[in-house]
Length: 528
Image (tube, rainbow, N blue to C red; front, side):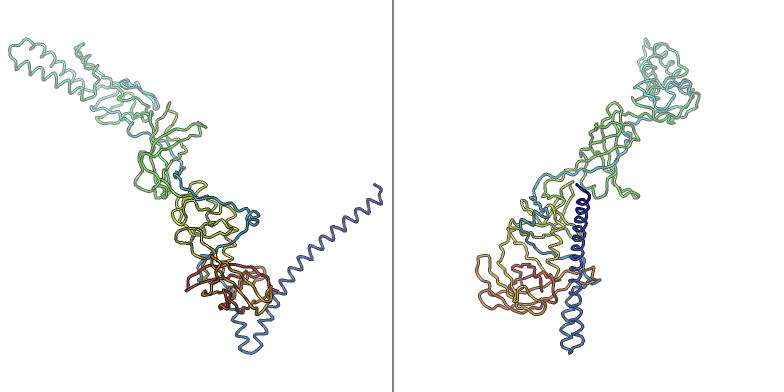
């Protein structure tokens, strides 16, 4: 491409971009100018009403009084109305529906726990006589000891004297074995049995007593054996130490089974019961888990953490769970059966919870519900929804915004749900104005009402509510105005109503009979 042609092409591109920017700025300026003209027209009407006769001023100020101004004492709860969304709009905003289903409910509660010793498998080693430790076979904490493994030897003057008394009783029994006096033989046998029992009550091993019988010689330092198999977790004795009767020398723990103590929140306590299944995992053994059962729920709440402690017992294969370790605990709570919907279907404003129920014709009904447990990506519905009803499971915030806009007029009440829970039959309601579209000021309004069977409704009360959303950027509040239309002929209601200014208005037509709502429709008009 030659240089002159390249230059011409660049000039054309720059010119095209400049025209696009100018057009965009023109559109933005046009929209801003339209808003400014609307405000100017409103201010002119207010100003002219104030300068004219008193009755004119009063009429204008009455209309301005109808503007929806927020009140500091107004309830924060918002009214909602049913809305119609055609299939094309549903696809554009991404509306998906899901059926409310009844199923078995299980809740997984996750908590952090700590491995503890099984208190029922702890043993304290002590002596029942005073004496001195001469030999110490288990001399360090953490040693594994077996049942009847020697722990230490004890020299005790009282124990040595009892051995000698036992030997004298045995010798006396042997001498009197051939005695002709039966009472003497019985007395000797009783002396031997009493001395033998005394040695046994002092935890002397049976082998040591048998050695006395065989050797007929007292042992100066008697060995003491471990009563259980386990690990020494506390050692309070040294070689040569003097010990008293009842003094604790060792604590031995059997680690074949351990406890895990986990903390759960107060609101989770009703979901857990003794016998509930628990799964324990440890960071040291990725991919592995240990199964256990809840054996006890503590009857108090920790004041600092506001949690309740639960105890889980589980087998300790190979001693891999070390007391003091942190573990992850998953508790499975069975909650019976209930109705659930996807979590995204629920709108929770803090004061109330509701879902949007679809009736299959593009009509979405906002319905308050009572919720139960949150179950992962589902939530339990206790009241307000029946099994099989379809609810919006996505784009619910968009539907909620539209619903609140439709019901912005204070005191608006959506058509109640039928008592039997069936889809309600809708009335045929149409709206028109003369001129069409309406203009700023007074307009002739007309509403036609027919019941679900197509018959004209002649005995209803028809009211029309005009509503314009606020414009925060222009510091302009919402505006609203109402008109009542009397019945004229064959289900047609006519009357005059005022459109306060040009712009987009939402027109809500409400049909009632004897104070009870029959149906309502929302139309959108753009006043000129």
